[in-house]
Amino acid sequence: MLNTLIVGASGYAGAELTAYLNRHPHMNITALAVSAQSADAGKLLSDLHPQLKGIVDLPLQPLVDPAAAAKDIDVVFLATAHEVSHDIAPIFLAAGCVVFDLSGAFRIQDSQFYSQYYGFQHQHEQWLSQAVYGLAEWQGEKLKQAQLIAVPGCYPTAAQLALKPLIDKQLLDLTQWPVINAVSGVSGAGRKASVATSFCEVSLQPYGLFNHRHQPEIATHLGVPVIFTPHLGSFPRGILATITCRLKAGVTAQDVAAVYHGAYDDKPLVRLYDQGMPALKSVVGLPFCDIGFAVQGEHLITVAAEDNLLKGAAAQAVQCLNIRFGFPETQSLI
Image (cartoon, rainbow, N blue to C red; front, side, top):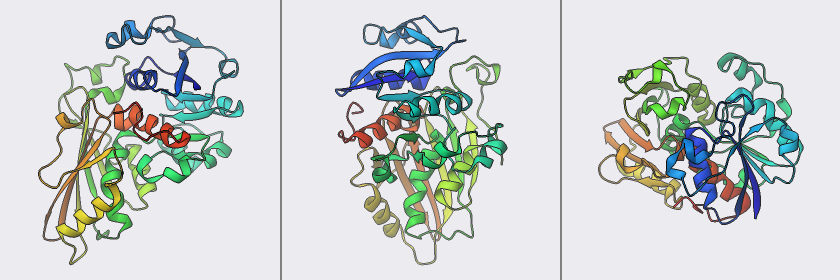
């Protein structure tokens, strides 16, 4: 049994993560924590997330001293803002904990990236160089040895799962950059109140054109440039990514299908559509990424759908945990 601490448990992804780990037969939730300044400190998680009433009635403890909190802890999950993860992850790592960070603080092994896209100077290049990017379907061997796992962003997970097999098998004509148009529900903005993400204020609209921090995350890990345009939709949760590409001359729909099946037929949390297209209703509340595609001549449109809080955050973190410690990959997820 592994003792685990969840920091940032009061948020949407943190609550989902807690629910998964609570029913995991190899995990013991030792404590739930929030920042020392959080208004949620001292409250029961089940008071904030009533679906957990009678299931997880643990208090949210203020994290005053991370080094002390690390005592007797094997695994730490950080469902925290990137600045917070940047500061506290090294403390838990120094204490020997295995850390799963759901923020962006360790996803790119280039400190200049953080100055440009996150607005702070990264101070932990040693850990940055050791972090393993937790795109679970593609990083299995590296995850088994990792002490710090940087769980990918929600948009990058959907985009990379759809594009990576095609790029790796050289099916795409990359003189035409893949164009990713993705729509997310408002839960992706977090639980903190804001007029900009208030459900009554949100309409379908693009944001972060040419400067969203997930664009360089996607491009860096795919190894090719992409155009990425995120949209905020007036629905609670889920991501639908529609990606337009150009195929190399002579590549057929059958070739695309064969590559997808070769990549994912043994991956239990990616579901492929041989007919039709994924929809949000097929994935919301579930840990899957669903992928479908259509080909016309040299043009390919591939569609990926996932729950941004699950496969885009909490479920992928637990999937990485399972791979890291040799548990069944879908333990507690399905």
